[in-house]
Amino acid sequence: MKRGSFAALALLVATSGTAPIGFADAAPVTETYTITLGGFVDIQGVVATPPVSTINLSATLTFDPLQNYNDDTADIILNSLSGFTPASPIGFTYFASSNQLFIGGTQNNSDFVITGSDDLVVSLDVTNPAAPIFIPCDGPGIVCGDQTGNPAYDASGYTTSDDPSSLFFIAAAQSSTSVPEPSDVALLALPMLVLGWTAHRRRARS
Image (cartoon, rainbow, N blue to C red; front, side, top):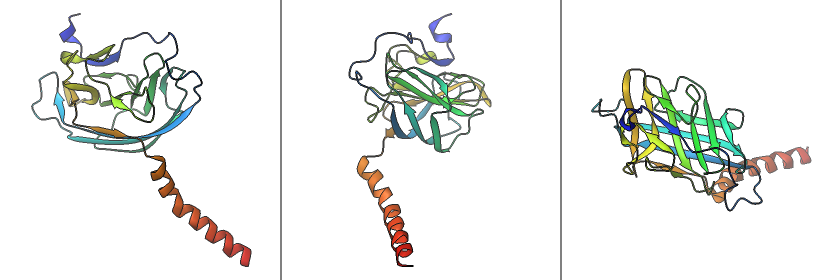
């Protein structure tokens, strides 16, 4: 098959190998990834204007950086998803040898989208799980349709059944991803702690 004929995103690197450097004493981590995808382009060159302009996703994952995960739906909590509805539940695939994390619909596997389906994939390099970055189409082992090897596009996007020949991926630097800072989490938790302490004091007085 010619390179230009690929119509899917896939991870082709081996899933076995040595543990990544920096995780010698790794233990399971829990991270909440807040992701905005925008600046979509049809990298197959079929549709001039993508049907969806922005997708927002927030998901909390628990995973061991030394272990591989495939289509895991048990260790992910989908906090929110707007702008696009995939045809299958959201899961994640993680490859310990390359620190590549994929969040997406499980219809075609969470690291893979196929044209002609309502599917979504977010591709992240989580060498530092608390500082994820998008994987570009020239990332090792990545296939991005006709744009394989082009660093101008990131390997995150969607496909739709309405446009059976299209792959809508994001232009590099058009999207953002973040993990809540510990201080932000503390600020969110503070009102709950205050409410809990107030309730405790009221019970103690009665």
